[in-house]
Image (cartoon, rainbow, N blue to C red; front, side, top):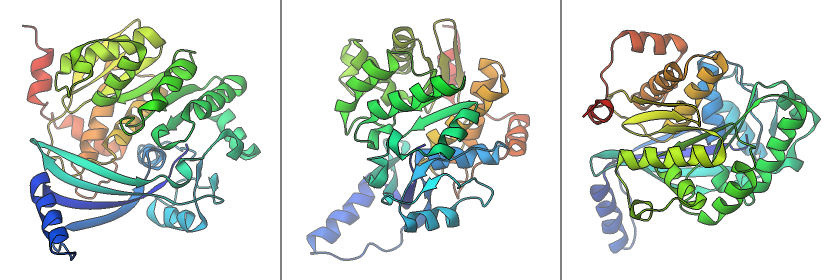
Length: 345
C-alpha cells in the first residue's frame, strides 16, 4: 500500500536532444514533437511491487485508493490474477508522466506527477477487511511515502497496527524525498528511530538524504555524489542509528546491512531499456527472498536478477521465477565497476 498511478512513459533519446525539441516547439509558440515512443502502463510503487511479486509466484494483497475510473484502468492494466478486492474507489486518480532519456551515460527517468489519492491515504481509509488482510500477511510494505501529506503519521499508525495484530515484517520505501525534504525529519524521528521499520529499502540518493537527516556529516552529503563508498558509508550509518535492516540498491551494486552483517553484491550488466519501476522490481525480489528465508547474499543476488530482467525488458515486464532461474544459470556478466569495488586492493 498505498498507491496506484497511471504511468505515461515518453521514451526519448538523449536529455539534450529531447529538451532541444521541447525548446524549439515552445519558441515557435507551440506544436507537436513527433516520433517519440509512448507507453501507458500500470504504475505506483505498490502496484508495481505487487505485480512483480505475483509474477514470482506469491499472492500479494494490494490496498490502494483511487477513483472509479482509476479502478477500471487498474483492472485493465494488471494481471487478472492480482487481488484487487482491497482497491478503494472513493478517491482521485494518481498519474505520472515519465520522460526516459540518456543523461551522462546513464538511462534516467524524469517524472512529473499528480499525487491524487496517494496524497491523502490514511489509517482511516482501512476497513475491517483490510485489517484482516494485514493481520494475515507475513510482510506489510508501505511504499511511495513521498507523495503523502503526512507520511510519518501514516507509517506510524499502519506499522503500530501491524505490531498490534501480527508478527509480520514491516518494510518501508520512502521514495525520492528531494522534492519534499521536510517529510524526512518526522519520518526519521517518529518512525525509523522508534523501531517501527524492520526493513528500509533505499537507492543511492535516498540513503544520503536519510543519513544527513540522522546527523551524518560530510561535503559529499550536500553535493551530487557518485562515490559508491560514500553510499555504503551512509547505509552503514542509517543501519546503526535506526536498528533497521537497510537494503540498498544502486546501478553498480546492491547491499544489505544491519548491526550484525554487511553483504555487498555487484549488479548484473544488461542493456537497460526501461528505468521507471526498477526499484519496485528490486524490492519484489528482496521481499521474496526475505519471505523465503534464504541467506542475505542469495537474497541480494535474487533481487539483482529480478531488477536486471525487468530493466532489460523492452516492455517493462516483470520476470517469473523460471525466468530468474534461467538468467542466473546463464552465468550473466557483472557490472565492471561493481566487480571492481568488491575486489581487494
